[in-house]
Amino acid sequence: MTDLTLSLTRMLHASPKAVYDAWLDPATISRFMAGGADQRVTEAKTDPRVGGRFRIVMTSDRDIAHEGVYKDLVPHSLIRFTWESPYSPADSEVTIRLTPVDGGTELALSQVRFLSESARDGHRGGWTHILERLDATLQSAPA
Image (cartoon, rainbow, N blue to C red; front, side, top):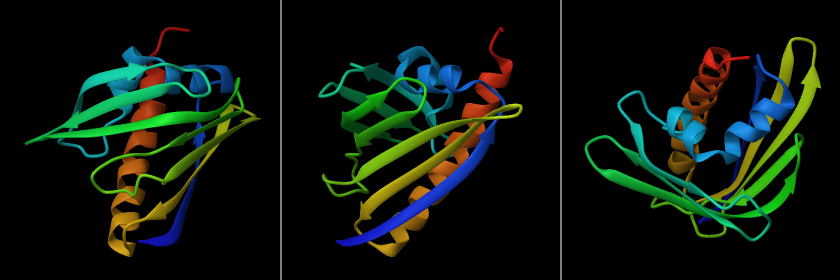
């Protein structure tokens, strides 16, 4: 295991409130939180409070559970949580920072601690796909 990190930044065409709410709402998570084109979310549960847990099951040819604990929640600006999956050490953490910008929100996502460089690179691809799906989900949401 190593202290590798990854960072992604993406412009989303929605308000920080809409983006923040999407990350914590199981129904919305079910629409975007799949790391591959062949995956879908078959289970999404959240307890959006500091110390609360979440569980997301991504499914393609098999179920892959992702779980964690919310460490920080600052409405419309910050979400930090542990990221427990078969491809991450138990102490991996994800931080999402939301900044209002013209036309929407800049989302900066960082994840720390991976099992290997290839695991980090796989997560980079997964998070990139998730953020693309998040933007599409938010753009298709009723105003």
